[in-house]
Length: 597
Image (tube, rainbow, N blue to C red; front, side, top):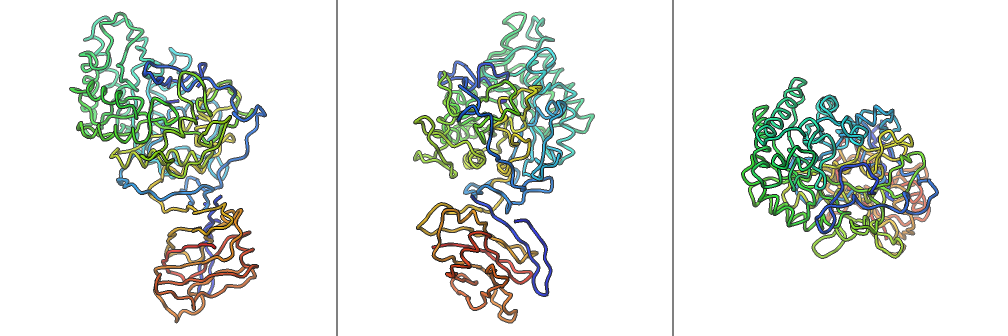
């Protein structure tokens, strides 16, 4: 498919501090491979043609939605993130694939564009992705993209480009999946074009040899660079087959389930096993939540040597089904004796448009299209739901022209991808790979993109906080129960654990209290050992008047820690503007909860 305050060490007589600041708060002319099939599974337009690129108006401006400074090569400062992080309820295996397709990086960088980290500095995209939680890169390979105008501009993913990207990924400490399209250009359910170099082949045996030789030579070249893949995908969204056009005759084509299909893929698989027997082989189908597609693919790949079925799942396409449909198909794959992985997914962070990146290509994902395909964010509001039909992962909606749509925000980009990860892990899949996250663009149109509003970099090419989703399931929640309520209470920090090397924590920012007029704020520091000998500094909070208020007398046996309820209006006012700071003795480990009435 085709666009955390800061940690400060402060030393004093008894107090070393760590301050952690929580902020709360498609088209027909699109030159991209993922021409997703319509609802009738017959193939169709990739998302449909949008009426305009920015959705709201044609002002050509976008609100600033850049990173808050949380994601750099050194890692994610979760305390600085300007988005809410929910704790996972699924069990993620330690080796769960947290993948990112970086196939377009070479072309984008060659065109002069730069990937910026959260500090606004140019940084190696692979190092920043690794620090964000990505553990696997996905790279497509085309036979000879110079034979196709679109492919040559949209990645130019020949062997030399693939080698360069593979080396960078492995040197950054990540594994990678190599995706053979068996074409000079995009391969998908509607397009399985035989490479020009093979179009004169007249027999199936010759074609089988050509495919096997191509796989063998590609892996040999990568092995020479000490950059063999961990996984190899044989065919891209090939539930209909491979090499279905641009051939000398139909006898060399390979429809799914045919003898040619099995012979070609098995010949390729044999070369993979010889290159390195530990490499896992993936067969890939689109429409991950479509039961008939997956059922037929399982049947049509019977007799082929492979390990995984990879699924594309784009919740904004009607034919891809709901999360519950996706989970059912994952279970069907594992029941058939194969492992499952989500090879592609994506979601947008905005529907605004910015003239600085006008590449002349309409964006794939918009509010709705009104064409023969899915309704974009209208469909997403129907797909990203649980078994009761309720939106998952805190996703929020808005009304657009009397239609309910998932709001296109950085927070919802995180939420949508986290929802796919959660559902996949629950159903037993081994990972999720994001597609198009690298596909930034510019007004020169040198690397045209329909995906820039689904990338993980904003229109200034600065990384977005939503990229923290690759660490989803590994971090505690920083989610506020409410940041808009004017009457009810809520928990502002849920089970945040102190670490032993820090003692001062700013547990919430002013934006946590936006729109709230609390009558009282309660600070709880639970699960600590009582030690009166250490005096007032054992636990305290800062009241905004250059004074620390001791919580020593607020011991509460029920929480095995300290609790203090603040009602002073001047202190509450300070908290609303500046956040709450808690100080504790060095070496303490505890759980902090801040709630309000």
